[in-house]
Image (cartoon, rainbow, N blue to C red; front, side):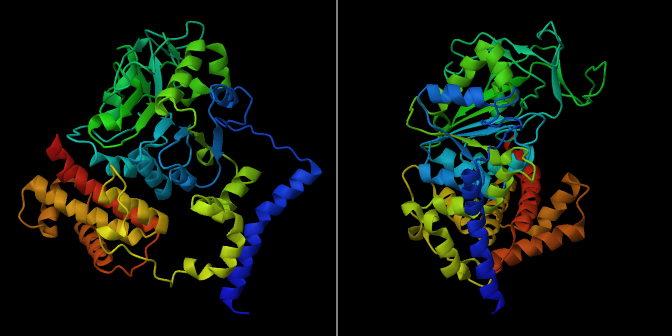
Length: 466
């Protein structure tokens, strides 16, 4: 038996292991406990079971994503994605899923604190930037590092780390999110950067005597010159269709996921009303849209069954996003079609616009990014990003032709930490990948090249916008 046959048998067995464990635990009556924060199955103070129950009471279907966010693509924008307290970085796949979901008119809620999602948002910020006309902000969304303190508005029985937000404003939501809400109670929150697009579209703000304290163990905290202070947004909302993006969706960002947990919802009715308003606005009141909680981004220990299922069922859920219920026969596909996933097999490429189905309101770029995400063709992603970077530099710098040497002459002053040898070596690698579609690269190399190109864009293109 050769190594390919051994690999086929191994993958076939692994495909059925989760099913066997599920069947065995059902037969012996084993029940799992959900103690991790922000899980909709956790009925303790730190869980979101009450929030999920309220949503179901309003007529929506609540579901959880345990493995791959690719399943969202089956709804074609007719769903609401909820990301609560993520502790894991989004994969490229997840970022592109959110991007295509928003482009298809879907709703997204991201509730984060302490900026744990900032790195994950970088790719999403970059992709959406070109679809927001005249965007002069610092990206779509970023959270401020540190714990929010507000000296003029907080729980008097406790401390300024539990702010009470009373400055509520009508933004692009038209006041729908804060309807019937007079105040929001926060618990060890952060803030949204007032320089990003969601920050400028803030609908809930702190008082001027607030700041984000980075030294969270300081018994007597006070703001310093390196910490963001003043009136800061804690909730932002944007409707992409109102910014000129055809069929664009809606995005709400909250800098404290704790306002939705069982403890805060149980004690403060305004928090409960605010949560209901968000779901109604993101779904546009359509109760047929499911509410999808992304629990694979929570801090689930590796020895828990949910982590095991997320790890082994990721490919199954990816296939389940395809029509006709292909995931039901996934083990058979694993055995018969294993060669499709081996590295020596050339994956299909898009040759022209006619090879891509352009849905109404979509662009060629967004459709191709969605296609390459599905195929895992990171070589083409690098080529597209580099091609866009070159066009942007020529336009921003008013060059007739792109020249990497001229780019280096500018970058060596913009970014003194950048080394010449490293710069030209990376540029050479990017051009090599762009010129040879047969090169296979991994996800981590694609991310390194993305951040390298993003650094150049921030210094040579974005600065021109501002």
